[in-house]
Length: 301
Ligand SMILES: NC(=O)c1ccc[n+]([C@@H]2O[C@H](COP(=O)([O-])OP(=O)(O)OC[C@H]3O[C@@H](n4cnc5c(N)ncnc54)[C@H](O)[C@@H]3O)[C@@H](O)[C@H]2O)c1
Image (cartoon, rainbow, N blue to C red):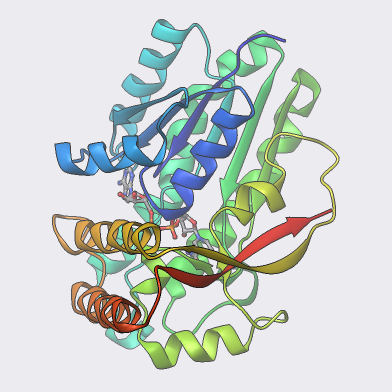
């Protein structure tokens, strides 16, 4: 099988890292495309993806010309762009009456325009080579709507229509286009939610819990057809306190990253989440023993 080249936008984020890892573990060459990141952020990403064939690239997916240059660069350097996972996304929540034009434009730009921007430049090569896989990460909000998210829900619903239409245009040339609509997944985006909103949200999930990032690439079956039916399995695992602390410090680092720069997402709320995580770490450090029991979520066919 030829070495497939996969691009994952928002590749440094919560779901992005999980998708990059899943693709690389399946033998793909992966390019994690994200906004310019600091050396520290990149070091963290590399630590999470050590040993895997993943490189990083800086691109603003809301910028049409930057996407053109990026897609052409990938094809020139790697010979192809076979798999495109449009995962970059942001929220700028407010009720319609309080939402300003900048909040609307930012969310439509990053969540929806980006998909046009990259697909427009990736599809020709995919069709010419007779192989392409495009996966657009939508959201359950785009199917059901969500209070305070007219911008986000519109973008995510738009993405679904985009996917169905493009699929009709390119299917005969070996290119598939799908959208995946995750429910609520544990990432910096959802960790930044206020506790009461988060609790209410989780209570509305049929399985009664938030998803884990690693479930999305598996549940979406990004590359294999037909998709398997999947179900959640929750397992308890005992790990060392040191490993637990390392995981949580990595979460804090991602939250801190989200609090700074132009991509700051609800900085105050991220600060609260960091305080909660630190408090929890203090409590765990005070318990006897060197290990801690954590809950993890697996997927079964
Ligand atoms: N977390 C959830 O519960 C959830 C649920 C449904 C859908 N989603 C969707 O999954 C995707 C990933 O979300 P996440 O939870 O991992 O969020 P995240 O905030 O952890 O990651 C998003 C990534 O997108 C990047 N990004 C933002 N603007 C960009 C731009 N202009 N150009 C390039 N990269 C940009 C960010 O830097 C970040 O690394 C998003 O599209 C989100 O809407 C998330």
